[in-house]
Length: 103
Image 1 (cartoon, rainbow, N blue to C red):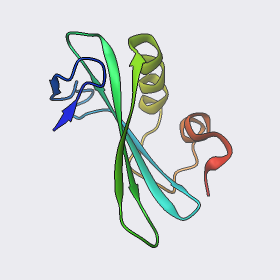
Image 2: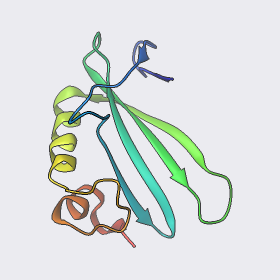
Image 3: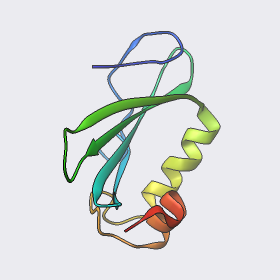
């Protein structure tokens, strides 16, 4: 379970179109998936970063807290992609979100 990095509350995940907002990309051969969790009490986001390593063990880390406005801006970018799960997608949203880091 993901916990808010500001207050420690367990987060179930705000749903956007039925799922927690996330986006995946291939960066230097590793797959990264970033998922956004909004704390209903603090109104800040905690971001779970899952890294599926090409060689080595997978890792999960957390980033944040991120302000609600900054998190919503990132989610708006994610929502512009028709396939946020597709690590090979090079749409405008993926390029905007990940910048020059994409493989």
